[in-house]
Amino acid sequence: MNIEIQKPELEALILERMKSGGFQSVEDVIMQALKSAPPATETSDQAATHTGADLVAAMQASPYREIDLEPGRARLPIRGVTF
Image (cartoon, rainbow, N blue to C red):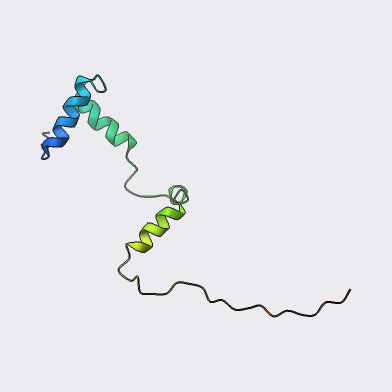
């Protein structure tokens, strides 16, 4: 199998890391990237790791930003209490 790097800056970064001793070969770079990348599909455990910032980012990226998702503000009925 041949893998072709299209971006010169990526190739330069890989060569720089190899020269500094961070990786021994291009295969080491690819293996580390694959080990640290999240799996292609999420399980229910992984979905629980999303943060509020992820939700905000997803909502801001939505093409339906004009939809109002603000909950209604209604006062709850209050009953008189005697002590």
